[in-house]
Image (cartoon, rainbow, N blue to C red; front, side, top):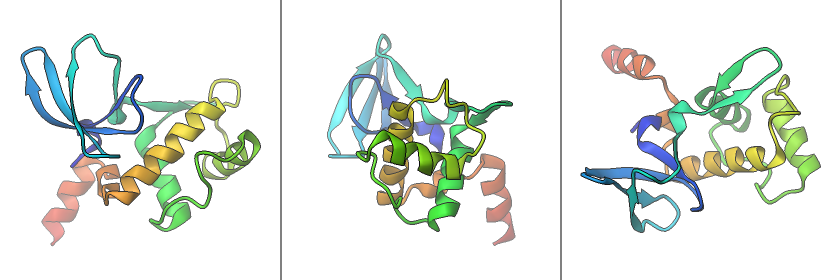
Length: 142
């Protein structure tokens, strides 16, 4: 499993995994309740591997941010909830990514990132955070 197959669909909660492609779009399965939904090409869909977070110097791929959360939490669920207040969320995110751009990364973005991390952790999908080249190298070593 890689982040290329995990999506966020605008207007729908949580994350989705691509099940199959169709002529007019694809079928995705919710990580929250395992319900399948048909998604057409007009839907606003974000693939997690293509999302980046603004910092003061560059854009950091979401994969790297999620890895930093994983390292901070030792692979466990986050110590805060995505439902915590704005100040708590920003303090936590500042520990994870100290140079994030506070003017361009909103509390709602931080909530999503924390919720997404916890969903991936809950479904044992944190291995999807490994770069495809890193994964191939680690498989060759075994």
